Amino acid sequence: MPPEIRKIVTIVEEVMQEGERQVAPPSRRAAAVAIIRNPFAGHYQDDLGPLIEIGEALGGLLAARAVAALGIEGAQVESYGKAAAVGADGELEHAAAILHPKFGAPFRKVLGTGAALIPSSKKRGGLGVPLDIPLGHTDAAFVRSHFDGMEVRIADAPRAAEIIVAVAIAASGRPHPRIGGLTKDQIIGADGLR
Amino acid sequence: MPDVALRKTLVYIEEVFHEGGPPAATPLLRGGVCAVIANPFAGRYVQDIAGFMEDLEPLGRGMAARLLAALGGDPALIEGYGKGAIIGEAGELEHGALWHVPGGYAMREALGDAKAIVPSTKKVGGPGARLDVPIMHINASYVRSHFDSLEIGIADAPRAGELLLALVMTTGPRIHARVGGLQAADIAEHDGLR
Image (cartoon, rainbow over all chains, first blue to last red; front, side, top):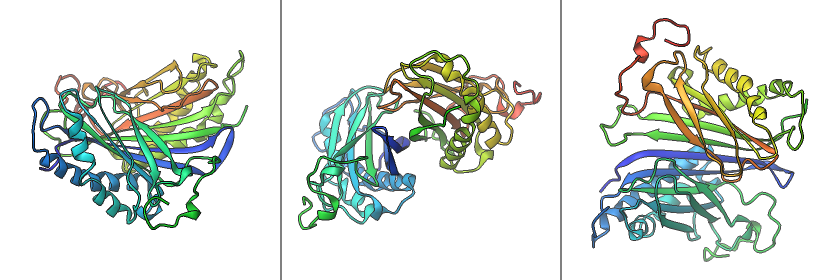
């Protein structure tokens, strides 16, 4: 089942200054968000296969939109995350079906990288509900400078029978990281963790 | 007058396919660009503030160009516009009014001397405050199909001593506009109104 998309939103954030200090070069991140019809709103559906297919389609589409919005190559993306919010008449499990089984492979294909797990969050909510998309390094989940998050909200979504599906990517870690831990130049790259 | 100290920018683009009715042949684009800058007058009463409008002109032109580029880059495709400001709590509503001239004229210039007034709104608000920026047709304010608005905002802005400045543009009427009134095709007076 292809997703029935009502609208797509892209957001690009560029930070020039944080903590009264210049960020050079500016840190840049983007989110791409699709608002889709929830085919199973209002009734219990045992087989969520169609939502898994929808997730597979959106993983690639949203990743491509976000990368294009940042105007960089997929390989330059350093961190990523995903999230979904189901409208009032849907189930949390609908968000899980979209995000978890098949969303990641096409997302990683767009980036050409992605050994690390894609951090995620999900919730149910009404119109304008804020979605905090977690961000983590694409190749090594323990890279501490890249633990981050991006808030997105769409004023008119999700309606009761809709689902918001979002990805976020960043071309760098947090501005001025200085709390230690694994750094990106120490990545071993064997297990997606370190 | 002080320099413009830019902390961050955000570009928000919506691509609307439908809102429950027949999908449009060409999806509607609605976009906003926000800049978060230091409010040079925060925390005290300053009588002479008007000179800051000129300092904001390059920022206004840069924002208009950036938004236009994010909407495809062709000024001929832009049909609606609006502007707004959120003033952090240590500032005054009057500080937001400084955006009228540099924001409005930058956008009109970028669109080839659009004739209609740029509708606007402003308020004092905290980080995460949302602003419904009004939108009207760029050449004739009375075109009913183009009365619209776009909600914008940034989770961490404006801080107390900051200003959040915004410009918005759209590429067409509301997605299922059907309440009559003056149509864009019937603009005849060329006075910015009808």
